[in-house]
Image 1 (spheres, rainbow, N blue to C red):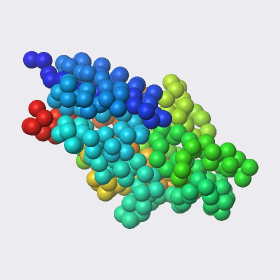
Image 2 (tube, rainbow, N blue to C red):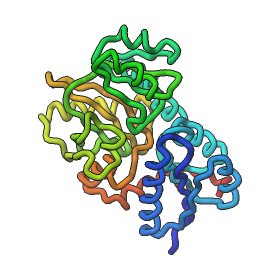
Image 3 (cartoon, rainbow, N blue to C red):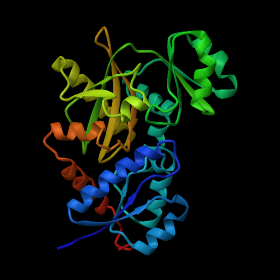
Image 4 (cartoon, rainbow, N blue to C red):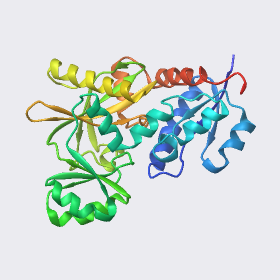
Length: 305
């Protein structure tokens, strides 16, 4: 029996458009292999009319950043009554705001790097007062877009301009190893260590073949790994995230770990971390996509169908 139509939202207008297109292409292929009919949507402006005409059984949201990840699309789909995979409005709004995520993590007693949110109009003076080295990043972007590690004061102005943001997050630089914890349902998948072949885990290191090495499961003291997974799951729950998320962490040379951020719509490209973690847990890419589609379909209201 042929399975129902699934609408795949991909592309969009954010700075992560190209990565979204890659995620969307992978999802469409997997859905086809699973027997689902698909229709893709890349125009946010005509989305409501397009969805009403197509009448999909559910939406697979393959957007990254911007309206696709900040709660906007989630609110629209909730209003229409169409189920979608991933977190709802509240979790998306908070997770997309790095400063809000940091504040929530601190309130839960979770370890995060020292940092401050600065207004772009006064950012240079505030950032200089924070101390070097530091990490400068836009408060509401993903995929390491606009991120710089500043080691010298002379590089600060350029780093701030690179963010292109009205509000900039300045954080202490944690020197050490980088990890990510994938959460599926309410369980953590095998811990992944990221070894970038660049100054840090830049956009190029994330999305260029050979740009980084993913070691999964990570080779790490089991006690430290368990603590990192515990804290990542605590943040996922505190955000109210659902279905899946990915929490990035740093481990310094003393063995202390720090949570950097939570991604409520993790990339699902051939080079992405979440599918690597799923495979290490014995879950194929197609099985992962089917599980997420089932979550989406369970939320579609009867009035829509």
